[in-house]
Image (tube, rainbow, N blue to C red; front, side):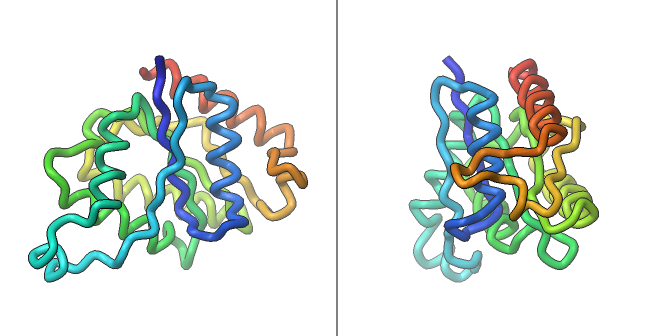
Length: 176
């Protein structure tokens, strides 16, 4: 019985990164799939000192720990992953233990251009280094012009993207 956690670096309802995570989860075929909620307050050490870890942050940390594997898809904002994703990573780093340690992790991106996707994935890999997950090195899934790559039902349409996503999910499944 496999448990898969998906994290979209975008908070928008119509996010192509959320669609990409959902398409990946469908291809992966886990027994249980959860799409994480990373709509957290900004990390602030004073808030943590006064109120402790927010419940939503602890939930995400627990979901990461319980998952057999994690998928992250992030947009590119100014040559890096979204602030929402970075904020979520910062908050989770404050929870007990390290839920990311040796966790199989696949990263991908849906962005306006391929170069933006490459930059955001490179930056995300650097951000994940302190947590020491088992990050798959490829194949790279870089959905460019992402607003045009999903049909009206939210399904990925580009053959090359579907092929690469299928290969990446197969590699992720093999890591469990």
